[in-house]
Each structure stands twice: as structure tokens, then as C-alpha cells.
Length: 109
Image 1 (spheres, rainbow, N blue to C red):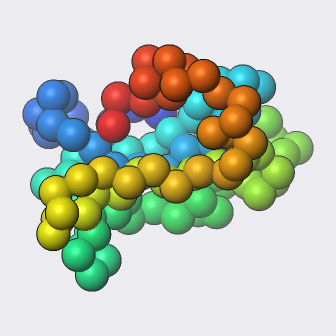
Image 2: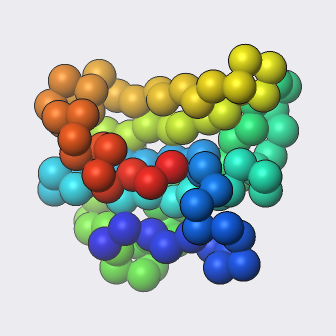
């Protein structure tokens, strides 16, 4: 159910940024290696937005066809090049409902 990295030539151990949803208690995500991420001020971010990526995932039957992208809790991982740190933005319910072990084991950002 988890989206595979787009660029198979990227180092599999390279840190990633991306967007994600919690669907049926599983994380569904789309990621980009930090070296290939877009600049957004001092941040490196995933190029995809939640709406367009969700549509692509629906077409591939990875997420429920009847569900709209804003119905599932969602979030984003970004890299701050100035402070050299990652930031996690997520719906509050993800942070409260999901044990840290869930997103550490399923997200290999």
C-alpha cells in the first residue's frame, strides 16, 4: 500500500521529504530524496501536493476511490537547510492516535 520512491537511481539510504495520509490505520506516502526536493525558501519539500498525489493514488487503487484527499488525516515532512533539521507537520489526530513506532517503522523519510 505504501508508495515506492519515484527515482530508483536515488540512494535508498538518502533521507527523504514527502507527504502522507493515515488511511485505515496505515500510512500512505509519496516521497522525494532531499537532494532532489524542491526549494521553498530555506526548506526542501516534496514537489507533489496532497490533491494531485491523492488523485494519482486513487487511479492506481492505492487509496479508496470513494474517499476525497481531505477526508483522511494527512501531513508533510520537510527539511530545513538552514538548521539542518527535518520538520513533521501532521493533523493532530495522527500525532495523538499513532504511536511513534507506527510512523517510524512505516515512514522511511
